[in-house]
Each structure stands twice: as C-alpha cells, then as structure tokens.
Length: 575
Ligand code: B12
Ligand code: SF4
Image (cartoon, rainbow, N blue to C red; front, side, top):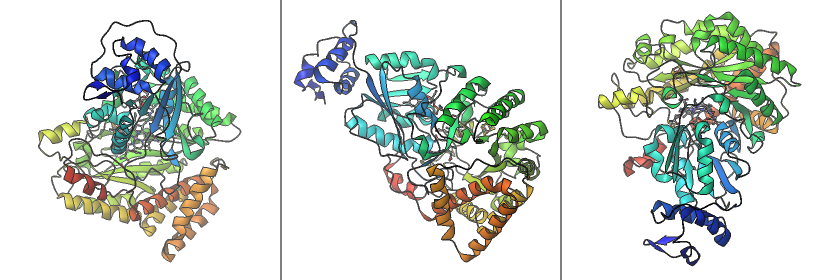
C-alpha cells in the first residue's frame, strides 16, 4: 500500500517519511487511521526509517486477530462429522489473548473450524498458530492477510519447530513459548517497533495465564483443554515434544489448575482434555494433581470427565490407576507404537519394551478408563508381516480406537537427523496423511507400506473386529463407576446425531453389531460414555475413509517441488 517501486505513493504517508518510526506510528494513527499500521510495517522492513525515537503519544488499542486455522487434512481426532465444531478446544489462541495487555490490545479470536476467517476485520495485527498438520493453511492465511497489507505474526509448534517452512509467509515469527517474552513482545508490537523474530525460552508455568475461553467459541468444542505440564523425560526417537518443550517437565501447581478448571466449567465444558505430553511420568506430582482434581470434581454440580496422554508404565502403580479413575479420567492416549520389540528398542521407546501391553490396557479398563492407542508402522525392523502382527496384537486388547500412522520424520527430531544422515529423507510434505511417510523404509517398499497401513486400518475398523474389542472393553469396565454427566450442550447432541447418521447408513451386518454394543451398554451403564465416544471416533474414521477433505485451500512449503503439491494432498489416507 505504501511503496511502489521503492517510492512512497500514499500522499498522507509522505508527510511522515522523514519522521522517526515511533513518532510516525502515533501520527499515522491520528492522520490515517489504524490501518496505516500495516503500511508502516512494510516501511520499516525496507529500512526507510532510522531516526531516533521520540516519546509515544497515547493511541487507541491495537486490534489483534488471532486465528487457529483449519487443519489441512482430516484426522481421526478431529470431528469433521460435526459441522462447525471442534473435538478439543485450542488453548493456544486463548493463551496468547490472555497474555496481551488489556489496556493496549483488543483481541478477537477465530476458530476456523467454527467460523470463516473475517478478512475484512480491521486488524492491526493477525496472529496465526498451528501444528504441522496446519502448515499449509497457515501459509495460505499469511499470504492472504499480507496481500491486504495486514502484518502477520506466526507462532505455535509448527512455527517453532519448522521455521524455514513458514518464515517467508509472515512478518513476525515467534518461536518457543510466549510467556517469558510476552511483556517485551506486546510492548514492541504496540509501539510498532517490533523485531522480525522472537524466541521464547522455556519458562516456569506459573507465568501461564488462564486462556480466554470467554473469547473462544467454547460452545462449539466437545472438550475443553488444560495443559497442566509441558515436557517429557523420555526420548523416543520420532518425538518432537522434547525439541519443542523439553525433557525437563515443568508443572502448574494444583491451585492454578483448579482456577483453570473453574474457568472451563464456567465456559460450559463438562469434558476436558488435560493437554499434557505425559501426565503421570512424575508420579508424586501426578498423584497430588489427581487428588486436587478429584476434590474439585466432587464439588461441582455436574461431574466433569477428562482425557489425557500418558505412558504405559504408570499402570504398574495401582494407586495411580485408582486416582486417575477417581479424578474422572475416562480416556487416555498411550503410544503403544508397535508389538515389534526390535522396533521399540530401535526407536528408544524403552518404557514399552518387554511389557505385556494387552494386559496393561486391561488394567485401565478395569478402572473404567478407555485406552486410545497410538500405533506406528514402518520402523527399520518392520518387515511386510508387521501389519498382521499389529492386527493380531490389537485383537488381544480391549482397545477399540487405534490411531495408526506411518513412521514419519517430524521436524527437529533425532529421527529426522538420522534419516538425513542416512540419505533416506524424502522431500515431501506429508502433513496428516497417516499412510504416507517422508522416510524410505528398509524392509519394504513405500507402496507396500502405504497399502499395508490402509489394509490395517480397514481391518481394525471392520465392524466385526471393532465391535469385538469394544465389547471386551465394556465387559472389563467396573459397574460402580460414576456416570458421565448428561450433557445438555447442543454440540454434544449434534455429535451424537452425526455419528448416529453415519452408523445408520452402514450395512445390516453393522446394524447387528451395534445392536450387540447397545445391549452391552444397557447391562453396564457405567461404560456408556466411553462406548459412545468410541462410536463417535469410529464414525469419524468411516467418514475419513469415504471422503477426503479437499476444500481447504493451502500453500505448500517453499522447498516442495511444484509437481508434488497437488498429488500429495490427494494421497491422504487417515487412520
Ligand atoms: C493438545 C494437543 C493436541 C490436540 C489439539 C487440540 C487443539 N484444538 O489445538 C489434539 C489431540 C487434537 C492434537 C492433534 C495433533 N497434534 Co498435537 N498436541 C497437543 C499438545 C499435547 C498440547 C498443545 C497445547 O494445548 N498447548 C497449550 C498452548 C497454550 O501452548 P502452545 O500451543 O505450545 O503455544 C504456546 C507458544 O507456542 C505460543 N504460541 C502459540 N501459538 C501462537 C501464536 C502467536 C501469534 C504467538 C505470538 C504465539 C503463539 O504461545 C503459547 C504459550 O507459550 C502438544 C504438545 C505440547 N507440549 O505442546 C501436541 C503437539 C502440538 N501436537 C503435535 C502434532 C504433530 C499433532 C498432530 C499433527 C498429530 C497427528 N498426526 O494427528 C495433530 C494435528 C491436528 C491438526 N489439527 O493439525 C505436535 C506438533 C509438532 C509440529 N511440528 O507442529 C506436538 C508439539 C507434540 C506431538 N507430537 O503431539 N494435538
Ligand atoms: S513418551 Fe511420548 S511424549 Fe515422551 S518422548 Fe516418548 S513419544 Fe514423546
């Protein structure tokens, strides 16, 4: 807007050309209105202004528009089958909003799965968060807003771990955690004297504020989100958690967690995802926390149920299982990874080696906790028989939901480094395409791997197999478990109806299976919530299988050869 061939072409802004950047910020506000802020950014980037700073005049609040973008492709954990809804609420944009000083910023949030991005909103800054699976959409949004002259800020896991993939699509890149740098960052943003890149250190979590759920479309998320800790002391080779938030786990204290729970409850949530990397790994702390959550839960008019992530070794500890159950944990995501012991050793998943995972999953079920398993195929020690081995293992467990993916060398991981060293890293953007990988496998071809995963997913979710595992889980559940609260939230009703719609479109064979599940639930109502959740995920899986998400506009990463951009997205097959 401001420069054309290096010359100023906006007459109002010419007035400011000889002034200091800081002063012209305020003056621009007065003369041209808030939107000229965007022009100044361009102006500054070209290094046109270098006069000494002057005192800042008070200006209006800056409008900050924070977006959690759509994901590039469907995944098992998202709920595309419920239009305009999300499975787990995004905590990042609400946290950034809470860190922005109230007197200087007016913040608006956009959850793109719920509402369209408002490109006409007169934002002074647009902030976009995202994970790797949203990278294409982040870049695309960055392009759109910059074309409109609005300065774009990128932050979050993808921007932090793969800055080279997004840097050229934003004006300000924030890597790492925002809390420790928030005062400086927002001050500089407000004054327009910001830097091209910020790097936040790993701070203490007591600096982390309660996310602004009041600004988020909380009524459109099935679960709220609460991160009680960051980091994990294990060192699985494929994992990016360590690079992102570190091996030394940092914790919020129990009072802080309870305050966040109060805010989530007030926002209407009755299911909450404890968004930790590994909730139970520090046992004493985990037990104190679970006791605090259990006490809090008992005081609520309606009981809240929780999901989280943890590692299998916690099931050694009977007290831990009891506390998880008492606190209201209804599902836990566990990286089972593989039944192949050599592959577990290869990937340094030591806590799973020589452990009878099927028996461990039963321990959770005995406590009324549903295990959701992460499974990976394509390790160097996986041959073509691995798919059948996975299926045989799965059918020995009471685990209905398996999230299966090809081993993938994520950014900044030790695995990626090794693949690069060994010349096995492929230059493709895999994003969420669970059947695809960016690694050349050792004991099978890429085609065998992709076909094998598709076969495995089809087998795992075949009505007969899925129902067998689900019935086993229901059978193991205790009878005296407190029921999930009866939600009167519209979004929960929509989820039930959506899964019902998909389920009832299935074959007569499937209808018979469902009849058996419903009968089992009737005779054990304590398992109802967990079973209905499994059915919802089943319906989502069925949906993913039959329909690919093609409507999301994305921009491929800069390194990708053009020829690969479209076909790779079309290849997406999700678990
Ligand atoms: C909860 C969670 C989920 C939830 C997300 C719910 C949701 N709606 O967001 C679910 C279970 C759905 C999920 C799914 C996936 N996840 Co996940 N998830 C997490 C987890 C455990 C916590 C995230 C969280 O809530 N953090 C709390 C917020 C407050 O912190 P934050 O996002 O880190 O943001 C901080 C800073 O980055 C910064 N910031 C963030 N955004 C912005 C924006 C601006 C403008 C600014 C200035 C600053 C800023 O401020 C925050 C405070 O410091 C992290 C692990 C972790 N420790 O972070 C993995 C993680 C984010 N997930 C990851 C991955 C890979 C995925 C999947 C792709 C997995 C898959 N194959 O399906 C999918 C992606 C789904 C998608 N839509 O794309 C990776 C991301 C790696 C990467 N390179 O991007 C992580 C790091 C670890 C992991 N492997 O699980 N995930
Ligand atoms: S246990 Fe989970 S979070 Fe921890 S390093 Fe391994 S995969 Fe990552």
